[in-house]
Length: 368
Ligand code: IPM
Ligand code: MG
Image (cartoon, rainbow, N blue to C red; front, side, top):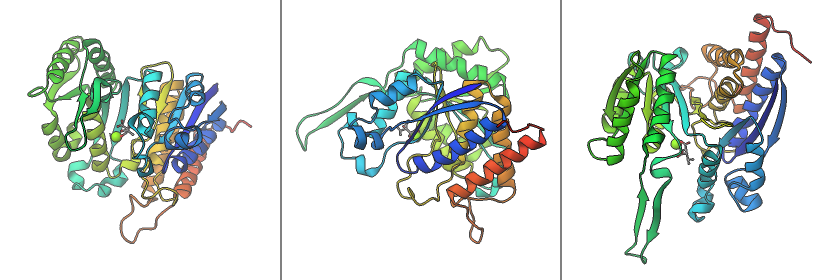
């Protein structure tokens, strides 16, 4: 198969972790006999500096012409002074919209060898395995009007949370379908005791749920869900929620399973999927070679599975990650006092080695 992929390393730790993810992608492609065509482009702050636009047309066209996009991270404090339409984040939001990727899947899995990396007691976090299904193209991220008005000292700012029934329906279907391949449980998270958007959300999700009698649907207010996530994380299977609640809860889920650096994501629903680790650009550690590349590497697994039906390829990467962690390998975010710490590159090497071993063990002959 020809894998035609645009790579957008972006800002902060984005380039470091993306390098490792691409190396893993290259080994998997070689071992499974796929041909790779990679185009690297700028996005976010990197693009702002090179082309004065966080999503240059050249980047967007490359993404639209490919089968999948692998992104590192965007943003950083040095770009905070830019007007909102030029901020790195606005480039990412425009890209999501242009690709039509309304469904953001963020698995939060507690690897058994990482139980003691969680700030929660191991018996609480043990067995946690959820997917947050975050609506990605609606809500307060995109609602109009949005502006700041008035003169200094007396300004006011407006953002608009807006959802339509079709927008809620389509993301609800994604969550219910996904639940059918898992533990048949959907928890829909809203703020229906306060927000009109959430009351509409709850109504539409319940209606869609009637078509999935085999899936158990429950509703939770977002404040209560935030608590349940830390008291009973292993209870969640598919957590369905709107854009901003999903942004917040997915970082929380990252903390719960030990490190945000472990979380991968897939943004799907359009022709071209967008795959990115959940962690941000982490400017405090950027360029030091200490970032955890596993979120980016696991995003490659999601890319292979969702954009190329490469289940076996994805499994190979996921098994390799879990084997490497089980052998005690740790990047700085996962290491305890006294444990030796791998650099970003060293962790990447460990995974490519494990990928090769896995492929040999399952008797795949490298294609050269
Ligand atoms: C995420 C990030 C983005 C978001 C930012 C960088 C725009 O926090 O993917 O979770 O808020 O969606
Ligand atoms: Mg976020």
